[in-house]
Length: 275
Image 1 (cartoon, rainbow, N blue to C red):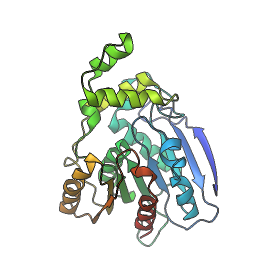
Image 2 (image 1 turned 60 degrees about the vertical axis):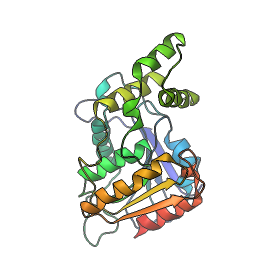
Image 3 (image 1 turned 90 degrees about the horizontal axis):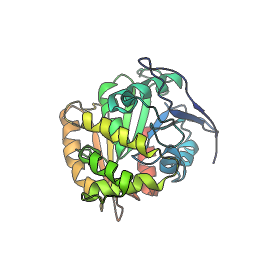
């Protein structure tokens, strides 16, 4: 992989609590002079799984982009805070804002291609990127949202059933809950109880894309075998109504699990963000 990177668990605080988030800033060998790109991974994943192992980081560095990767609370190399507030989507967005500024991101300025921030999110990361863009229009230049949805599946997660299963093996009736929990347990670096705290926090702040809509250009991407692909037109309509330029891309033969590995997805995203 070209470029170099430094990773550290940042010790800054936002609203008085240390988020224990692991952040890495990756520098390209040859800088294209464009704003940095922040990558937001999905539930039960990590920056390494979602972005490094799939070739995204290498592709962005080769394109001359400076990249900021973050492991969400309880994921990857991030800590597992005990306080519920650290897992709230609104709190995570505040932490992301601090991380962006810590990495040297500057507000958007006309005629300065190095100002501002581009965001790429996948699945849960798309939800966070949508809301971040909607609230940080002076900072965010463009958004790429992979596998987005108009609703958050985690909001319907059966926490009680999951806790019973973990305690004594009681079967989980809800297939979505059972599938998400199984996925969460597959990755050894995940703190399962922290992930359940994240689910509980998300249930307290359910996703409503119409509540706050990004106004910057957006690229919406999903596999044509992904049920979430049906959300793209609705999200595009919300963005267009708010004045955003929105593009939609369907990836042939891809589902929610493997769309992120698509070379076409990477190429479309890198071209879109360079405009």
